[in-house]
Image: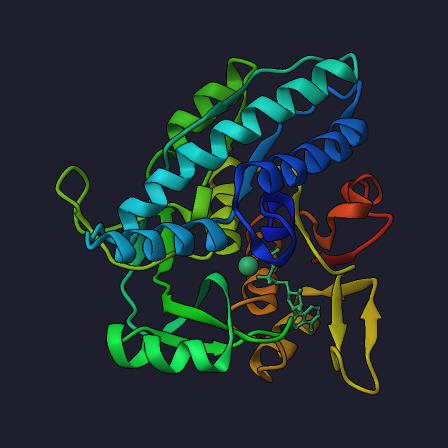
Length: 301
Ligand code: ADP
Ligand code: MG
């Protein structure tokens, strides 16, 4: 299972216009197709939707209409999923090992949570956010890349409703795109569930699905080379390896931010604990090495 972050599906500055997205996704596709060329391993691709779901929410505000975040997430699964399908199928075909990659609209059972911790949309200036906080009641937090981003509730994923469907597709030889934007959050009983407001973290959703499918490896590709201690600080140190218990201690000590590296490490820990297999967090640009555990931070039992 390969989880793609913002840098694989949006342009510089988190722009979501067609050309920037196409450029980002086609780069991700060719990096991963090259890494898997000739391999018969089945692939599940998951992806975030922070930039896109925030863009839709803002555009709808301007048009005076309201559609809840959970349905905006459903829209982004089709929008981004369709682009991933096209560019990945093209790259695999060009690499001489064609694959069929199918998109599954994914719902995820969640534990409701109101805390606004998930950054979405573009980067705003301090002047812009004062107005938006006042007029729309939106919440913001500082972004590590500079400026501010809107933050929304991020319910905790428990179980992917379509896990059985995804498995059936994999068994039939299809690759699958799932858990887009962390999945559409729902709660309640099977067959009688309700939608839940918020945006689920895609890494946490991916880990649930990876465990349910018994995936051989969980690969989280992002815009940094791995997990660092004292990230951005004077004693910054990049880790090539973390055991589950080391990672758990760091999570407990609260060294990783909730909206970014925190859920990646948490996702990796949960997957490794449940399966006894390895997870890796690394840079999309080093995809080939990260996929084979020769770069990035490897989380192991
Ligand atoms: P993605 O869109 O790939 O999910 P995120 O923005 O959610 O990316 O998470 C990646 C970001 O996490 C990096 O760009 C980096 O700024 C931030 N980050 C925070 N703490 C750390 C850390 N300890 N080590 C590495 N990156 C970190
Ligand atoms: Mg993220």
